[in-house]
Length: 317
Image (cartoon, rainbow, N blue to C red; front, side, top):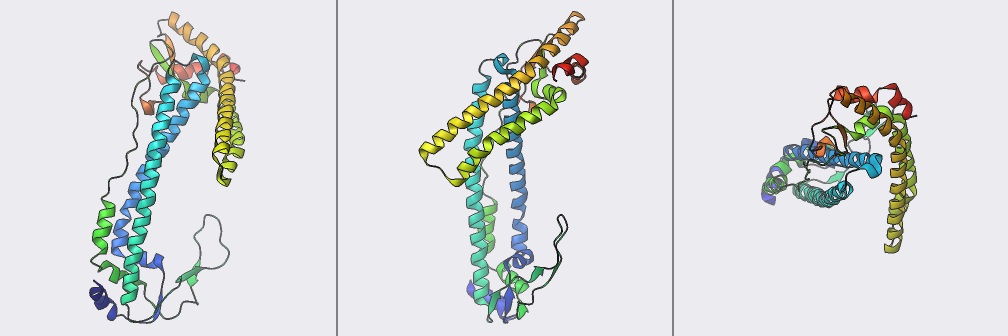
């Protein structure tokens, strides 16, 4: 193996410098392996979508309060537990993959450097100069501290010729990623023959109120998050968990209290529509992302018209 690397390096053997970023950019094997970033982006996007839907589900149940169908909170808690377990498995997998990927490339780079007949010194080839403006690309210049020949391209070529590198990278790239499952179970609504989505309705009517409550939630959790970052023992963790439960109950109460007047006003408008032949309306907390509810959804235009009614808007103040 080293003899092959030596043959590649001997022709360009020289005293010079290298930096890992430039080598990575010049290496075909490394560039091809960057397709894993696309996989990671896809998985991260799926993870974020699930997390957002779980949060939306919880907010919807908070808004409904005691009016939420039996079993909905328990169902959501199970979804949260499953997601937390799968997310932990995914994070462990990604961490191990990154460590092995880095280790594989570093080992190949070290073999290529060792096979070079000259002296190779690590040095960042270009450095930022001048004032760096937010959102603007950095201006760079050749690093005057880097002495000798730029060996990045020759080391990258030696790595691409390394017979141990490509199979190792291929094995890493073909590993099966842990799954993040999404429940698609349609759930029970509060009743009726057609349903209105709780959170979209509330967001249309009481956006500012929901934003204030969310801000209060974030602020209440800050001390807990700070304590967790500093590190806690078992007893402190248990205390913080209880504190979070208190915060969650308080925030849920704020959401319910804010929504109930809107609920009452909206129900009156929907009931009037029933007298004109419209469907009996219920409320669906389960996001469409997780399967919605077992009953058909009321046309968007119909529930939005109720949400925009002046009496419903007035109830949200």
